[in-house]
Image (cartoon, rainbow, N blue to C red):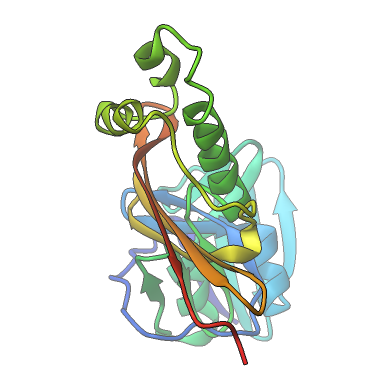
Length: 239
């Protein structure tokens, strides 16, 4: 039986590719020292491998066909987060499928192979929406606030605050934007994110399009809005 001890496995660089397998369910992973880790149980389920656990040696063994991966918790390529064992993404792929390409997508902070896919994005779409909607609500409620800058600081950078105070709030679409309206959510780094919304509304006589563009950055342990723009215009109604 072919065995590989993951504690001594050295990872290789990620490859860039335009596709990720549509058959693999996505899981939230971890990035440690430039290496991607996935939950051991998830990895075993995705490749239909058997897992056994030795509590005395803190070693998990993953077996599939005639191949075996031994994951020692005290090794540098096996991690434990909140009591859950994680193994190196590259290690699982290489052990059971040879040297398989791992694809990296910087815009979504995700990686994938033909058998697994993992997200490293710090915010989900719902979480990003909540942060942005909360900030917009605060921006639109400054009329009777005396200390406007202090009121907005937990939600915006100084640059964004200056714009909001100058414009006396944030004018947005007459129809509330939803997650389904989100046309783009793009990470530019692990601490910066761009979001765009687009919504069309109106009747046969008049038809409009509203667009919202926002930039979020991570400041300390919080995500705040760095830029917020609104565009509105009339367009031809759909035929």
